[in-house]
Length: 370
Image (tube, rainbow, N blue to C red; front, top):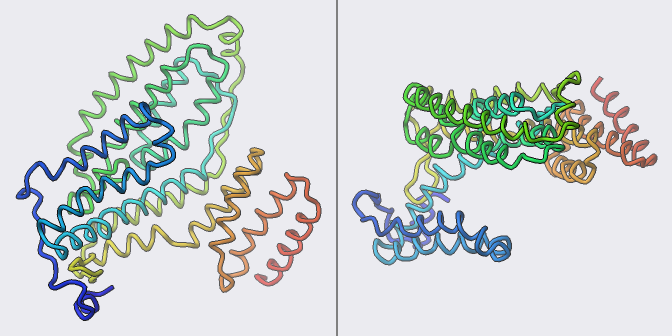
């Protein structure tokens, strides 16, 4: 909604004035502290309440800031600050995380790895580095399954996932805006893309190196306590396969969209309402990250991966998203991807009629595309 329309309707008496965080006192940070404590403690102290009402709890803490701000500084200022945060910080961040989540979810590591100390250390070390390209969420999604599979027969393995959380989910991702939410928010507000790489490379390698060494020692001691039948599997030949390698191209597109938005600055902005203006380069980045055709392709491939892994309910859910995204005016060659996924899922479900219907659509669209 434009500023002119808001003014015409009389909803706000004036355009909001900027609210400087450094001038309003530490007391206004208490709702944020309360939200952090809720995230940290309620899943442990009241898990059932948190599972059922975490959205309401988060909304309550947001209102604990917004309502007093509206009373103290005026509705126009409070609404303007909330909308500015949503439109210029929150939405771009969620779009980037979603894009990395979908792309990384289309890449799958499979094989018969055994969770020996060297293997576990290599997986966690690789995950710590990869967070800087696919984010902490994407790296966790990519590596947690092979790590679980590799350690499924071990009796002493809790420490493996504790260090995974330390390194992949927290320390990792400190070198680029792609890896960590606060760094990305800094990037959105003008911090150079490579600033954290130049500044934090040494400290990150130092801390990660110490923790990986400590992990290897602990895991080696735990490995020595494993039964002989578990340790005996270590000498068997190892095979590792990567499915969905083409998603690396989509990952490169995400990285390029974020990087270019920081390098290219036209100086032009577009009003997005309530006195906020979005830079054109930021709008171009967010548009690229939410491209429906890119998401359509990735979800089709993800459906195939899930079908081959016999995770049929998840494949069906992914296919529902694909159907919702598809547009009838898209090229036949692109729409064919969905019917190919329909066919594969029907085959794995042993649904002969659905497979036949899907294959007929594949033939029809192939002829149309040709």
